[in-house]
Length: 280
Image (tube, rainbow, N blue to C red):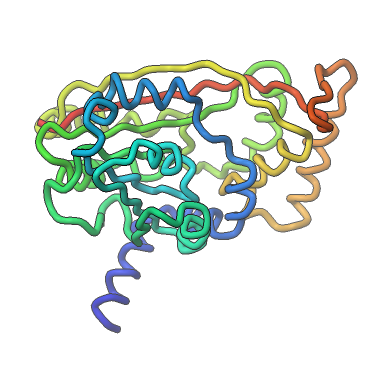
């Protein structure tokens, strides 16, 4: 085995097995159905959480870690940073990223093996992913590649857990198989149980929440569910059963569907959470 193959094998082992398998199986569904991030979130990220990004973008070097298909990267790309790069462990995601964000470098790596030298980045952004690798080892590696005074920002979209959204979540979340989903809050444990160690690396952890709505069609809604790693890992027969239950719930009488641009859509409530901390 070559050194490159050994490194690749070690990197794969560092990725949660459900994430590694699921995000390679349904890359197209992920790209098509996963929501982007509201402009208010990006504005806050670049003016409050990491103000240097908006104030002096031409001097900033930024990493999108666990970039997926580039949902966050595309929003950051408009700032014309000095350098914007991405790291993603799943090959299927990297391939899709290369198609959708052709102007940005995408590298193979993980949260514990970021393929860049020490003190490279002014900012590391992790969108919809930190819950998969919320360990001290990951924070140490993120701190390594950040410049002193650089900031790491974690961003998550989360469906509301009320009304129809809550009923839909009850249908599909039963399949999560004990995976460390964001909603469970397990990602916070590293900041709580290793607080002294984290404080050696970073300043205080800060948070910001934006509530908003996202328009979905019935098909959009199912594809979003299918894009979840633990759903994409299900046998096809089980996926079909779940799809039937989801569509049945979406066809309940009295739901506020409306026609828009030839599509039947409905607003689904979301919140987007941003968590950030700055390297000492």
